Amino acid sequence: MTGDQQATDAPAAPQPGRRRRAPWLIAGACIAVLGIAGTMLAVTWSASSSDDGDAANADADVATTPVTRGDLTERVRLSGRLGYGASQELGTSLGGTITWLPDAGAVLDRGATLFRVDDDPVVLLLGALPMWRQFAEGMDDGPDVLQLEQNLAALGFFEREPDQEFAGSTAAAIERWQKSLGLERTGTIEQGRVVFAPAGVRVAERKAQIGAGAGASVIAVSDTVKRVSAFIAPNLEAIAPVGTPVQLTLPGGATVQGTVSAVGAPVEQADDKGEKKLKLPLTITLDDPAAADGLDDVGVNGVLTAVRREDALLVPVTALLARTGGGFAVEVVEKGTVKTVSIELGLFADGLVEVTGGKLEAGDEVVVPE
Image (cartoon, rainbow, N blue to C red):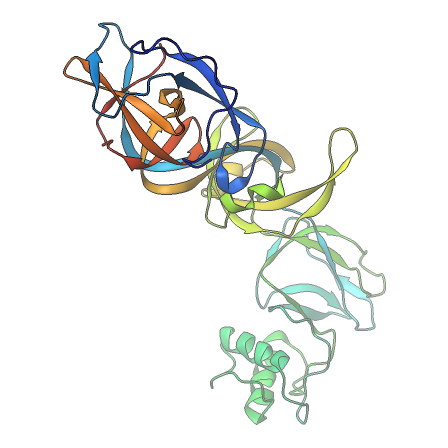
């Protein structure tokens, strides 16, 4: 809501010279940038048409609160689930027999053996591109070659600056890597010998048995860190960017701090009545991962706090007067007198409103309902 929005259906004005504070409602958006229509804000209607500066004696028992300067924040309540997230199945195009599998719960990083086929390792490397062709001398340049060389460099086998060309130095690095794994030193990597994943993984479950034939589904893996998956209304996206702090309440009542680490594209989710509505998925990472020890796939509640305006001049919504001539004002108490001061409004959030114009300063005492 901005300062040019006015109260509607004002009651009849009292006699001139009389001052009255009565509850009134303004239909409008609670936060202008979010467009949350239909919210009713309780303010006070004033029939006074006197100019700013006109003062009257303040009642001895008048209630006041100070004008403050600070960040205007908005809070959104949400619910979600804490866990390792959805799992993904990994396998290989190599033919052969599965001879070893990791235990569920094992955490695997770059260079680790995911499983063994015919007693040879299938290795985890990091990267966004899947392995879609054999790595060998004479292959065309490409970003997958760069990704391989970056991994070989991180593991200590590649000595020059990684690029997209498969050169003799690339083959030599592969041979050193193969020797460390007990593989035949060929200088080439057949398709299916390595699996690329964006990050390290945690083994969620075995999808195949030792002695079975290798295939596309051997193990299921998930994130290595527990996170909260939650959904909010798409029109709240502006107040939930990556980096937004979230206070989470765990089962048992303990509260921990988290941070929005990813925001997805809107998806359809069924509500309690089975009706599908668009929701915005959020991923929230705990600031202290150890706080989730012993918990997995459990429901949590949270409060997301977003700064809507930094270093704003703030007054309570309940201090507002909707003036009969249009606009808004507050009553300022100073040295036993009260005067009406016209102000311009900015954003509303959590019972406070931003003051963008008018003769008002931090520390001024404004009248509020008792």
